Image 1 (tube, protein in one colour):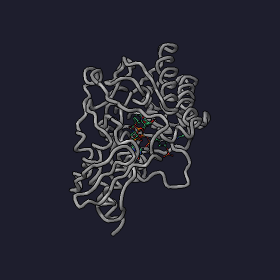
Image 2: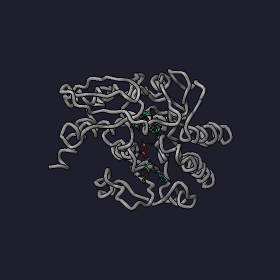
Image 3: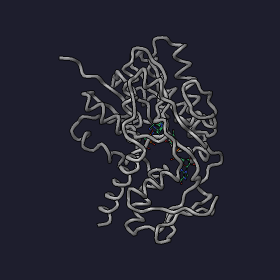
Image 4: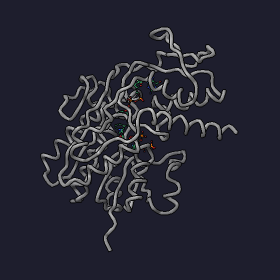
Length: 344
Ligand code: NAP
Ligand code: F7E
């Protein structure tokens, strides 16, 4: 009988971690997840797979070299998906050390544990379009990086030192980066703008909230569906030689567009008036349901991210399946159902 492939996922409790775990279980992998201790239940998304023993949880933090080493000894992974991160860009301005410690040094600890243990594990690193920062769009693998946030800087250092740099230094090490543009889903953390919009409009629709306050409505992002993007991670690790790939939809929209699309999916059409911090979004009945609050602006903003994933399409055969409109509708519907059932 063919031996089952084994994978270790760091960040398995996050949005992408849960989708990768499900994808690998479907593909017949033995899946291990590194999880840090939490005072809350971190396993909401994967309860069933853990109960059925399809996923094994190993406790450990990306700040703890010993725990990472022990997790590797236990999992003996063919593939490692390094998804653990302090992934909130806004918060990284307030806690820059944390971003460096987890997003940069965390990868260093993991890579050194693989090298020290003489493991043959292939490593996927979760890089990000935030590394492009203020670079002119569209951005691809040849675009010079210009990060503007501590999050983007930490991810870029990890990419340059431990992915690109170590690939040259250690020719036997298989490490690759997916430079992923924003990807969302009903499992997206509630502080990210898309999910904040889908939950808030669902509550407004059900009469449980009056309005939502947002920051920069003009920020432009290339938003895709997380379920599509994790397929690209897996494809990268199936290559014989490691390489880095931009993963994006190639479509750009503003935050305001995401509000409009979500509202449309909930049968709530919004009319905009005013400008800057005085801009408001009103219902057809004239009720203000979207306001702008300076509190949600970043110290430095990334204005325009639009990815060119031509290399991934050509070499991996990857392409996104879910459109912007379907993504907004999927999130709106999921939140409407969840909020309604919580408030029954
Ligand atoms: P997420 O939902 O915020 O998940 C982050 C995961 O990292 C969580 O499981 C979190 O655990 C874990 N983590 C944080 N600090 C840790 C530590 N010190 N030790 C161990 N685990 C730790 O992020 P995501 O959206 O799934 O993104 C996955 C990865 O892709 C991240 O590296 C992110 O930076 C990167 N990325 C995301 C996007 C995107 O649009 N989603 C785009 C480009 C790159 P807790 O549950 O305990 O907090
Ligand atoms: O912001 C603007 C905000 O926090 C998107 C992470 O997964 O993707 C994500 O980072 C845009 C920004 O995501 C609000 O200023 C307006 O321009 O949803 P976000 P992000 O910063 O793009 C990248 C690729 C990652 O790698 C990260 O890990 O929306 N915006 N008003 C707002 N943003 C938030 N959070 N809240 C607002 O009220």
